[in-house]
Length: 142
View 1 (cartoon, rainbow, N blue to C red):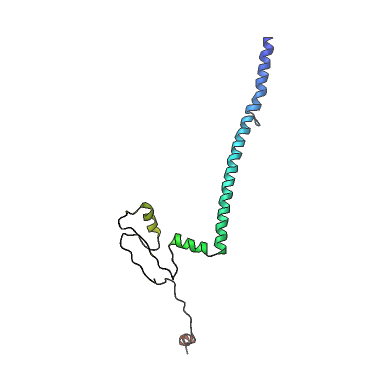
View 2: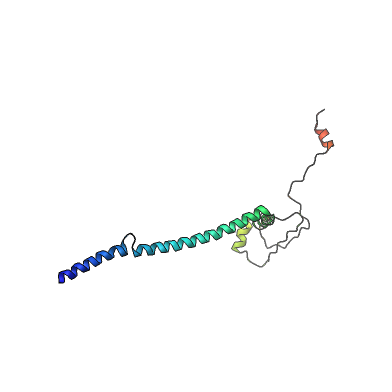
């Protein structure tokens, strides 16, 4: 009788092994469910990122407001009719973020010197040259 009990227990263990640790066992299913949850979260994050980028692309393609905003904040550009004024506190120490921005600015470095307002700065754009008939005649040999 004792031998029958031992044999039945061994068979029970052999049946349980594939259920828990086998190819399609509970532990493998649990691992796959965790991987699926991580992948779904990653996909949702990427979808949000793609939607944001698609919105930026549409803004850049359809209007000049996004292009103008990027030119102002990333490149420090101003329009011809605007006055550029920069407020700097003479007593405040230069922070690390300001120092990093001053190195990439197209407007020069930030200093503690008093402000100077230029009412109508000259445009850096090249003036349009329109050729008149007189200019064309002067350039013609003859």
